[in-house]
Length: 139
Image (tube, rainbow, N blue to C red):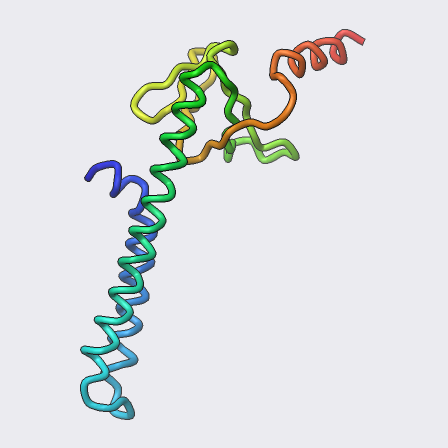
C-alpha cells in the first residue's frame, strides 16, 4: 500500500480534484435530477480505472528495470536535478550502482533514483562512453 501511495499520490489528488469539479457541476440547477449520482459514479469509475492502470504499468516497468539491472545490464534514469541538455544518467553495477528498496544508490552520487523513473538502456556500452569522455577531457 505504501508503494501505491508513493507512486500514485499525485494522480489520486488529480482524480479528487476532477471529482470535486464533477460534484460542483452536477449539483447546479440546470442539471437534470440524478446527474450528481450518475456523474460521480461514472467519473469515479473512470478515474479509478485510470489510476489502477497507471499503477499496473508502472509496477511492470519497475520490475523489468530491476530485473535488467540485477542481470548486469545498464538502465537509464531521468535526472531532474541537472537541467542541461543531457538530463539522464546511466546506471549499472559496473559503474558502482546498487539497488535498495526500489532505489538506485551510489556512494559518490548525492541523489538516489527511483526505479519508476528508469528504462532499459539501448545504446552504446557506458564504459565506452566514459572512456571517450576522458579522452575528450585529456585533449
